[in-house]
Amino acid sequence: HALADVGIDLAGRFEEAAAACQTVVKANREEDEDHSNDFSLLLDIKENLAVMCDEEGFSTDLAVKFLNQMPERPYSKWGEGFGLSVQVLSRTLSKYGARSRRTGNRRIKRVSKPVILDVLNRHLPEDFER
Image (tube, rainbow, N blue to C red):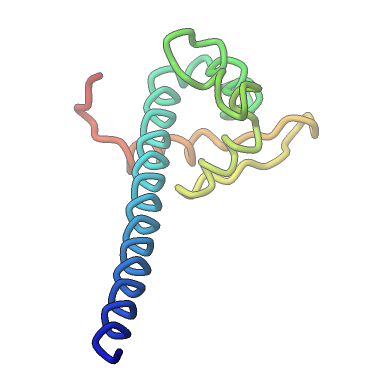
C-alpha cells in the first residue's frame, strides 16, 4: 500500500509540475508576442511619423486611423476585429515613457514630438530594415 501511495503522490506532483510548466510557457509566448507587436507598432509609427503628427504633436487619433488603414499590417484586426484603439495605442506608448495628454483640442490626445522621437530612438535600432 505504501509504495502504491507514493506512486500516486508522485504522479499527482508530476501532473502539477507539468501544468505549471505549461502555464509558464504560455505566459512567455504571450509576452514574446506582446513585445513583437510593440516593436512592429513602434516601427510603423517611426516610418510614418510625418502623417501621424500635426502642429501640436503626435496625434494618437491620427495614428490609429492611419495604422488601421494599412492593408499589409494587422492593426485593423486587433480588438476582436474592431481595430487598434486609441486606448491600446496610448497604453502601449506609455510602457515606453510616452504618455499622451489632451492639448489644444481637448478631445484629441497627443504626445509631444520630442517625447515620441525620444521613445522611437531609444527603443528601435537605427539601422533596422524590414
